Image (tube, rainbow, N blue to C red):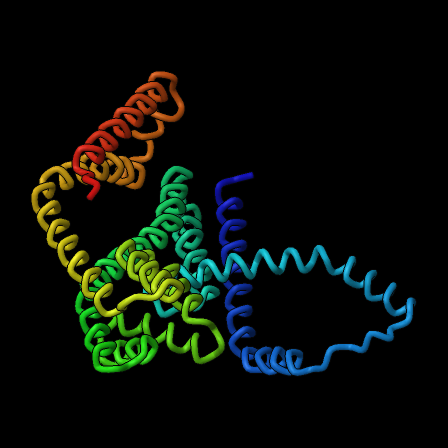
Length: 326
C-alpha cells in the first residue's frame, strides 16, 4: 500500500469521525428538552402495583438481562462524560463534553492526517497527533490551576463576609446567598451553584462536598470540614470561620514568600524539562530523517533511552528541591 493510499484512508477516517460527532452534537442539542421532559414524566409516574403475575415478572427479568450489557456500556459512557463535564466546569471552560470531545478528536487527527496526506512522513504525523492529544489536557490543567489560585485568594475575604453575616443574625445558607450575589467569580459562581443545589433538594453538607469536589482546594476542604463538624457538635461558627480566615491568610502569605524564593529553581526545572522535548518535537517536524536514526539504529535507541532517564532524574530532583510542604 502506497503512502498516498494510507493518507487517503486516514483522511477518510478523520472526516467520518468529524461528521459523526458533529451529528451527535446537533442531535443532542435538538433533543435535550425532549429528554428532560421524558425524565420528568418517568419520575412522576406511579410505581406499579404489587400484583404482577409471574409471566410479566419473567418477561421483565429477561428484558433486564438483555439490556444489562447495553446499560453498563451507556453507564460507562455517562460516567466518562460526567467526569469530563466536571473537569470543564472546574477549568471554567464553557463547553459541553461532546463539543470538547469533538475539538479534541479534530486536534488529534486532522493535523496528523493532513501531514500524512501531503507526504510529510510518519514521524511528523505521529508528533502532530501526540501534540493534538496532549495540548487540550494541558489547557484544562492550566485553567484549573489558575482558577483554583484565584479561588483561594478570594476565600479569606469570603469567610470575613460570611462571619459578618452570621453576626448580623443571618443563617449559614443566607450567608452563602450573600456571597453568591456579592463576590466575583469564581467564588461567587461556586457558591451560587451550591445554593442552587440546596434549592433543588440537596442538603447543605452535600452541596458543600460537591463544591469541594469541583474546586479541589485544601483551604476550602478545611472550611467545609469545620462547618460540617460544627453542625454536628455545635459551637460559635463565626469565631471558627474567623480563625480559619486568619489561617488561610497566613498560608497565602507563606505561599507567596516560598514562591518568590523558589522562583529561580522552578524556572530552571521548567527549562530543563521542556527544552529537550521542544527541540525533539521541532526536529521531528523540520528534519524527521535526522531524528529517525534515534529510533531505527541501536546506538540511537541507547542514547535516546539514556537521555530520557537522565532528563526524568534531573526534573524530579529539581522538583524535590523546590517543593516545600507547609
